[in-house]
Image (cartoon, rainbow over all chains, first blue to last red; front, side, top):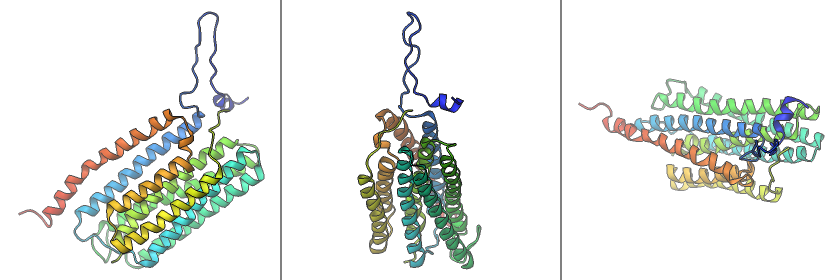
Length: 215
Length: 98
């Protein structure tokens, strides 16, 4: 039994002689690796919260904040939402398959999820290129407040980096699970991360795209 | 091995459809009524609640985990709202106070 497996075992209540119980059950009844992922998600939520609040601050204090997103960009963001939310569903199918020890099916759905993530990134890059061709740069743009580019590219860039990280992690875990190197709980833990990436996008679309829609 | 009891896929499909529907409603509301910050935030919060509770299965975990994760995070995020007064001050002072 590896050290990792030992760490996954539920802590039992033992008695040594007449000294009574010396170990308690886990307070949250989840594996420690899953708790670590939850704690990471909480800290990352605060990171995204901070960057979105900073964006709000800059936007609020600028009198000429650009309203640049036309219908094509809005529909593109909606398509990206559809893809990302759909991958949350496909990763859940992968988790269910992994929990029932169906390795081929779990691998297949993990890879479908990763492919969805890649498609999301490609659509996002297309959006970036479109904005850059219109003249948006980090510190200047043809529309108004110069910080627009920095805010847009940093928020969406940070999110895209998370998606890319998730794609890589899902591919590694999916392949490892198929080969028997990883257990079902590893697929479940990275699925949690993937849902979080989806969750952040639910705030990025209304705050970054819809609030800056051309009217 | 400790495993979380998870909901069936039936409710997951329902939540999936609901989240997509809310995303569409967000766009329609933003176009029809204007993209009010509060309207957008409320709809996004509903989506986030559904995702956390059903996709991330937090509703299937022990209440102690929910208690450990949610109030602390919300507290930190609410505390970040202290910046707004200053951003309004900057807006009122534009271009610069004489």
